[in-house]
Length: 103
Picture 1: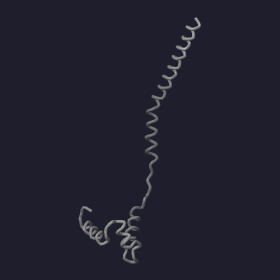
Picture 2 (picture 1 turned 30 degrees about the vertical axis):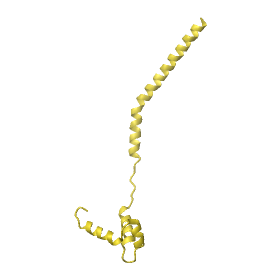
Picture 3 (picture 1 turned 180 degrees about the vertical axis):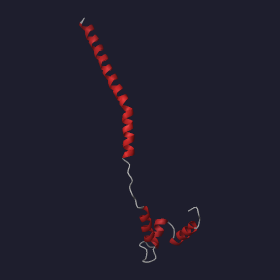
Picture 4 (picture 1 turned 60 degrees about the vertical axis):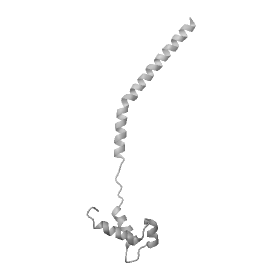
């Protein structure tokens, strides 16, 4: 009978393990909505505004490429290499677009 009692003990152990696992799983499932709310809240709260000073950057670039007095920092060759067109072509396009109300 020792063989039969050991198999009963193994069955009891399996049932206890199953109950423990079921209990743990229920706890995890119950905590999921709370965890999702916390992660969504933290994701929104962690964003912050970084001032990039875009207008100042625009003015600085404009002075570097288009200033008349003193001479621009970047000469015609660098302008052409960066923008893949001659400076006077770029200026014509810029004038044409600036007269259009859309831009």
